[in-house]
Image (cartoon, rainbow, N blue to C red):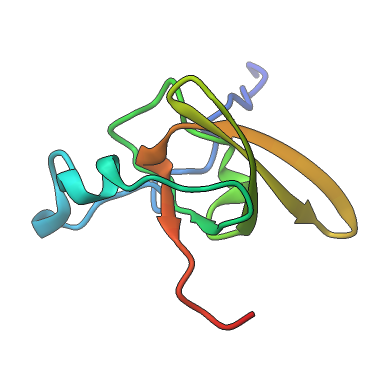
Length: 100
């Protein structure tokens, strides 16, 4: 038997799938939204932008913007009890609307 590969997008068929009405590029408001340092954001991976997408384990996580690098944002989030730094573009971010 051939050894099975476990690539970067392994097991993402359902996770990164778009519903028929969501297909294509997302709206401009999501791309043009400017986050400030300290803002809370939700990591919501957009599968049309592959090169800047964070790993699938961060899908749905809430993080805090700690910096800006060019067009990208530096997000600090927790994975279990470990602090992780993610660098991604605004296509994969949504403003956090919840409390605290």
